[in-house]
Amino acid sequence: MSHQRIRFLFLNIGHFLDHLFVLIFATAAALTLVAEWNLSYGELIPYATPGFIAFGVCAIPAGWLADKWSREGMIVVFFTGIGLTSVLAGFADTPLQMAICLTLLGAMAAIYHPVGLALVVQGRQNTGVPLAVNGVFGNMGVASAALITGLLIDAAGWRYAFIVPGIFSLGVGIGFFVFIRCHGQTRRPVKPESPASAGTYLLAQKTLFKAFAIVLLTTGIGGIVFQSTTFALPKVFEERLGELAVSATAVGGYAFIVFTIAAFAQLVVGWLVDHYSVRRVFAATAIVQAVFLLAMTQLSGIAALLVAIAFMLAVFGQIPINDVLVGRLAKSEWRARAYALRYIVTFSVMASTVPLIGWIHGRWGFEVLFPILAVSATLIFIAVLFLPKAVTTLPITQSTQKTA
Image (cartoon, rainbow, N blue to C red):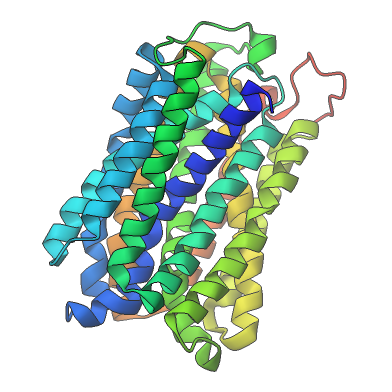
């Protein structure tokens, strides 16, 4: 296996672990901690908020350090840091201790997206498929969080749901450190690339500003939809699936099925944005989200399971689109910081969404949450219509260019 493929494999594992770790608490809280700590679901999940704030805020310094010091070195820090903080969370005895541990975990988790995605697109012209493959691994982490947490809760208790993945991440971090040491990459500042090799676009300042503003707007609204669906789905299934959800493992298993099927939407979307207008693909995913999120409002049983698959296909399918747009807009030497800005918006919105989920659920249940998410998806569709044509078609260096 080539050096580039091995590095890409490590990056994919990192994306898997990043999303797995930030959602362990969501399943543990819904299935076990509400009883152990004698708190309602709405009272407990806000303790995850500081962690998601750190997940967003710390992306900026992580991206800056990566561009100025070493992207590969920061990925080593990510693997080892998130592993150690997860193990620490496994020893928490109170909600406050858990909140502190989740905040540290969020700070370490913040490293991956600005740094890992910058490494994924580095030196590539067509970035849709590589980002989609990497995105599938991230979404498999989302899927596996519910399943692995449920299995470990049933087998050994909630503490091991944090400790076991933490030890695994430490091992991967050591492996990646040895790998980059063997290839002399522990300290390598990023060099500029030509627009063609980097897959970027030379744009007028006004067009660049407009495009990036729309990317950030859709990123923020998309963060609300993504966080609400991925964080709350185990609880939704516990309430809506009836006799199908008989244990923590069963709830985690159904969430795993939904997220796994939906994850592969990124491969389709990644191929589409490399061959067709981004505006068309983006608008289609937003409309699908709106329709099926609204349909979910009153559903239960097998119908709820099937519709959940439908809207998660669109939610996960949207992820590589914004990443492709950032890659097209940002030059290589500051791309990690551009991704950091994109993800600080995403995860700051996601942090505020966690207590919102608890508040809405406590007052009205999920019957109100899903219409709100449908409106959010509709706003994304409207914003996408204003994307400049210059960044929604293929670069002129590609012979397979399609029209917008």
